[in-house]
Amino acid sequence: MDWNSAKGILRRGMSIERDGYRFYMRAADRASDEHGEEMFRDLAHQEVDHLHLLLVEYASLEAGEGWIPYQEAMERELDLDPENPDLPGEEPPMEDMPVFSPKRECSLEGDIEALDCGLETEVMAREIYAEGAEGAEDERAREAYEFLVEQEEQHYELLETTRDYLVNNQTWWDSTERPFFIG
Image 1: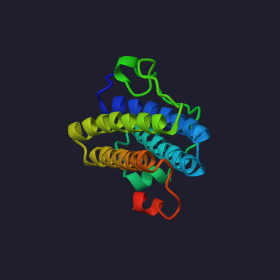
Image 2 (image 1 turned 90 degrees about the horizontal axis):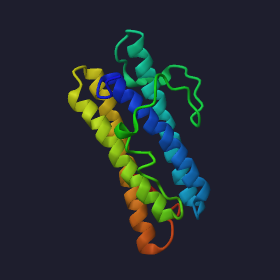
Image 3 (image 1 turned 180 degrees about the horizontal axis):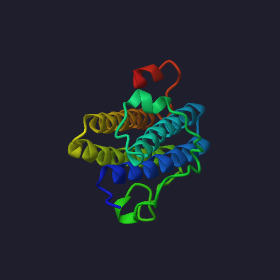
Image 4 (image 1 turned 60 degrees about the vertical axis):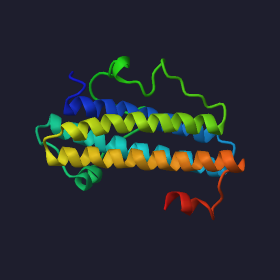
């Protein structure tokens, strides 16, 4: 498979979102505070939405339907086990998947380490989707990639703001502070 083709980018994205879900769920289980647990679980569930979008778009391309609008893609029924999804095709080679690979181990030893790994992960995922958007000739493809780029940027901003707050205040934000972070 050409890993830089539309289906190749979608397939790489599926692996990233699946692994991101697993990472954020493990980070939630190990978080030192209920606010951190809640944030990591929320991020994990957003990864499931991204995986849903990628799977539907891939299936649509495979069926010869072309790209479909985001809302339509998200409304399509999909039986999805995010922990062990049935992904099409083969796994991308490790050299094409720097996000979650043996070469890049993420530490879950503490909240800061988990946040740091999440930050790096969001940057790498964003780059893959941005490359897809730049090379997309189809407007719906560009829209899907740009949506994912925006999502990864929002995740990065949340993780960065949370990390800064945690480092500076030695505590997680509380329910009155969280709206400031998430808008």
